[in-house]
Image 1 (cartoon, helix red, strand yellow):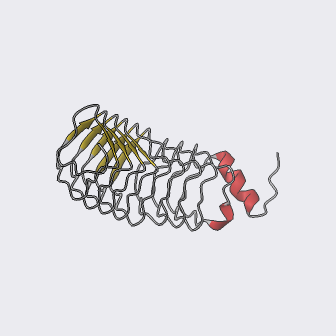
Image 2 (cartoon, rainbow, N blue to C red):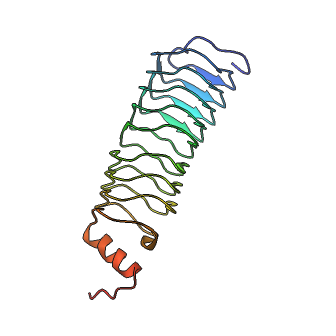
Image 3 (cartoon, helix red, strand yellow):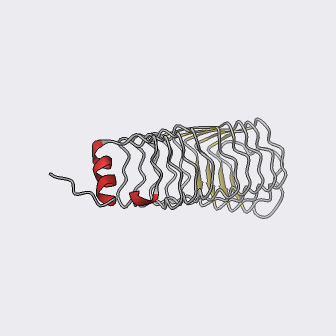
Length: 209
């Protein structure tokens, strides 16, 4: 279906391409194995929507209301969540690769085994969130608020972390290659031994082998 309004929630297995879904009211709808490509959800009401193994590719969700939504095994690839309301959302085994979240409200959230690689999370507030084991490879976390976050085992390799707030966060076991430790306020942060050595060397200390 191309370029026409699609007002009812799609059936399992449906494929929608370039559908205009602006301002649809799918409150509490359940979507299973639906594929959306370059669809627009501007100002849509997706409150408490449940998605299972759906794929959203290059979709626009500007101003979408997604509070309390639950997503299991769903992929949002290169999507735009400008000013989307995503508080109380649950992400389980999802893939958000390359998506952008400018002005989005993300916390509180529940996220497990989810891939945030190459996402743009500039300036978002994720403070106090459990992000343990999450993948943020090459994500843009510039000026993000990660204070008091659980980042144990997270993958932060080559992520952009300029201006990120890390006070009180738990970074033990996180992958932190290419991280410039000199730029952070780490007051109260928990580090493992390897990270502690990296921080010391970043500040000019000579660490004996």
